[in-house]
Amino acid sequence: MVELQGIRTGRHCVFALHVHLVFVTKFRHEVFADRHLTRMEEIMRDVCADFEA
Image (cartoon, rainbow, N blue to C red):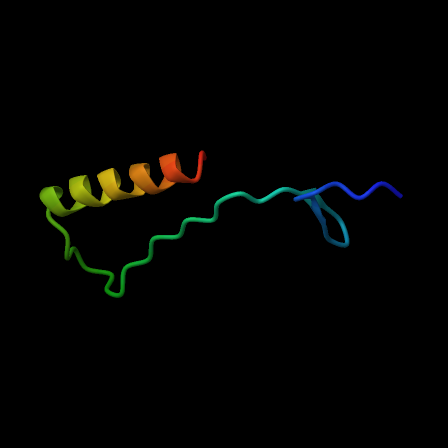
């Protein structure tokens, strides 16, 4: 069987995961203002650009 670099297999799937970016808040009530969310979006976009995702 040919082994492909970066390709992983599971029991029912084949995948190549490059980036798994998860953003989770600790609290359910609103703790971020628009300026916080805007800045976090900029940071996440930069991270995705660095990972070419």
